[in-house]
Amino acid sequence: MTKILLADPDPRSVQDLRDLLAQRGFELDAAADVAHALEPVADGDIDLVLCDLALPGGGGLRLLQEIRTTHPETAVVLLSAFGSVQDAVQAMQNGAADFLGKPWAPDQVLVAVDRALEKTALQKENHALRSALDDRLRLENVVGTDPRMQAIFKTVKAVADTRTTVLITGESGTGKTLLARALHSLSARRSGPFVEVNCGALPESLLESELFGHQKGSFTGATRDKIGKFEAANGGTIFLDEIGTSSPAFQVKLLRVLQDRVIERVGDTKTIPVDVRIVLATNKNLETAVAAGEFREDLYYRINVITVEMPPLRERRSDIGNLAQHFLRRFATEHGRPALSFSERALATLIAAPWPGNVRQLENLIERAVVLSQGPTLDLPDLPAGLQAAANPARSAEPDLAAGPLLPLKEALEGPEKRIIERALEQCGGNREKAAKLLLINRSTLFHKLRKYGIR
Ligand SMILES: Nc1ncnc2c1ncn2[C@@H]1O[C@H](COP(=O)(O)OP(=O)(O)O)[C@@H](O)[C@H]1O
Ligand SMILES: [Mg+2]
Image (cartoon, rainbow, N blue to C red; front, top):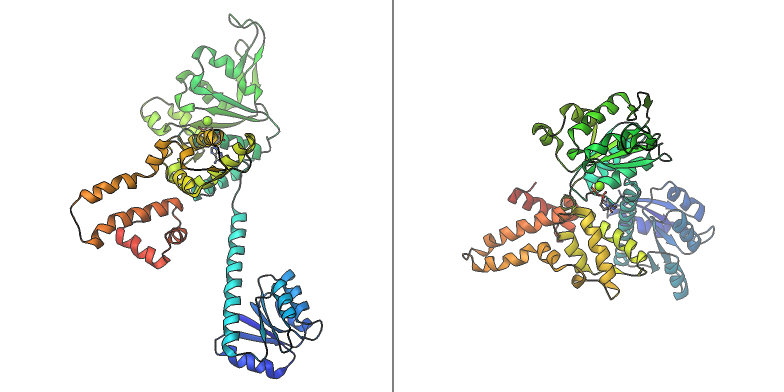
């Protein structure tokens, strides 16, 4: 319940205000001087203070200042029988929600109270939103507030400090390599090495010596001792990329390291223990690869301990704006154009585009736009034409609408309405509240329409 404090030394004045405000269902409290007024405010349960300018113990302005600094969410409305214009100006400058003369008219007080409460409610909401934002998980350099990304961050933070093997799957450009690096830098191994191996690109003949090293003279061309990637990664992380296209020989060798955590250099029988965290990535579906006999089942089970699935960018559109701004800031600074910004329609087009190349495609596109753009704003002409067409399939579908059979208006509007709601939901990462705001309809209207169109 909304609580109002009446800070006024005059009992009659307090009584009049009580009579007026009690009718409106407010909970009321009273104090006759500054010190007594500050007590309930300090307890944090006063939403609004109606305060006489001539309050004993320092005056209404003193109370106002105190409240603004210690409890900014509490609104203050000042009342004065002898108030001058100057007092009023000073009060407003110090953050009073309103300033009223005495005697007051009931309507005047009620309007001032409502307005002040509305404003603090908004402030509180903003405050709550801001702290909710601050509670979001962050990984350095990794942008992502979409719920699926947040879940990934949570997993990464939880396992970072263990030696658990982590498998990262996802389409090309979704941020697998970036995440592997983030995992390393969050772990206690961060001061150790991070060694990347592209497993798909290793020729069979070099495989063993690349990974495990060799002894001088162990084969033609082995002119000196060489340590392999696993040894180089000792005390750190080894990132085995494109594991899905690695050769059968590679898979056997890897299985052995995973099992025994030891390696042998080629041409040497000595086993060397290695202390490495293994992170793997693939853009292939390993289960399918196992079923097709292209990937060893026993290896699959070994590496499928903690699996992180990076969602494609088109499935987390709520992140596109932030990513775009992130890249714009970076490239604008790099290319000496720090003041660049997006036009609204350019940003809307980016958010709606299909992004088959995921974050990498977005990143490249923005760098190109930064380099080629002229003015202070990146606008539609700075984006590739294909992107705009792809982002706006609805527009090209309009002629179809015009050509089709003429339906009753209400029925005809259902198709587009459904599509628009789906897009809004997609843009808001499935958050219905946000989608309703975006569409400027209230929540119950949105819920009604979701049911009507069977959208979940
Ligand atoms: N969530 C993200 N936040 C910031 N940059 C990202 C994000 N995801 C990807 N990137 C950037 O996009 C590019 C492609 O990411 P990368 O990790 O190489 O993808 P993958 O390894 O899945 O192909 C990199 O430059 C990377 O830094
Ligand atoms: Mg990669």
